[in-house]
Length: 385
Image (cartoon, rainbow, N blue to C red; front, side, top):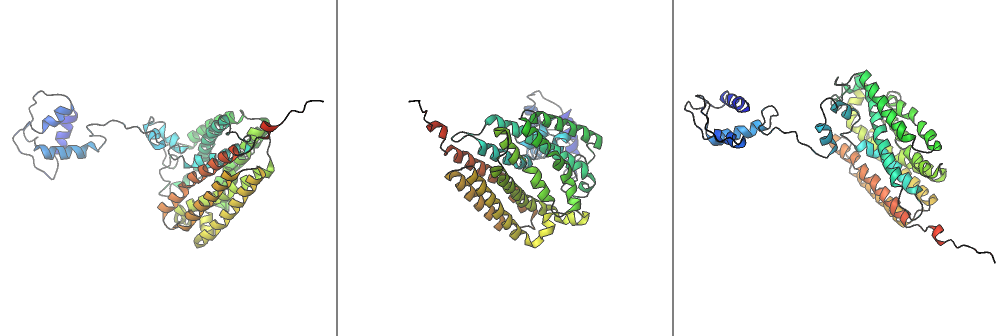
């Protein structure tokens, strides 16, 4: 009985001796919760005054084993969904970082930019393509995290922030992770096969980057550059999925801007782990730049904005797009100016804010495209004389 267990625990509490005479006053609180109003006689030494019992009851309710209202809470947040999943499934959901969706957003947003720029003048982006690429981003980000954790299992065990990742913590074996990776890649292939042949070939070409990126931190101080090349492949793929091929005058500047953007946010992210990276012999742009990080980030910002302006000009974008680019510039300027590279919490906050930056640019692309004149609406049909 739960009540007996609670009373036993209270009776053994070292800070309070319970009186020897039984009393029903405090026990009615538990009976009321159980909707049981029948009198119950207590054993000697198992009673306390009502306010003390309620205090102890509130403390015990925070302990999952003794909680009186021990119901599994549910939240629609990513972490809440993962926590509500069956215990046997949770390690796999955490392996693909379903509880931390920021990486999925950063992979998905360059796809949305490209799809938005490829839309017909005066039209909204293709919603079917946006949904398809969203699914693909979720699967490929999960696959990338699985590959990363398989490569880094020994490193992750030695870093406090990553020590509880499922493979490092021993919740998932290497073989189980490999099988799970195969499932994710199979589903991602199914998404890719929904596109045209040009896009299928282009998408397949990115797989080598996905597999080799986790090794780059052992080889070069520029693994963030390789991550940028990987994460922004959607800037090419989104356009080709809509148009059937790439317009390189738009796609290359957009891709270049995305790579520069990744160098900004992932350098900030890498500053969280720089002390552990030094101990483990792992390289990053954070260690390469050190105290000169802000000038480097400023240079990447200028390069990113230049690419966005060129891509917009070649795509015939209108005023709302350039207003959004200006807002992106202000966002990055504030982000870099206020950054404290020696505070991991601040680095994480600045890193995570890049989702809003990407959404802001997407909104500018959509509004800018709606402001275009669709020449086909104004074509006149010449009748033969």
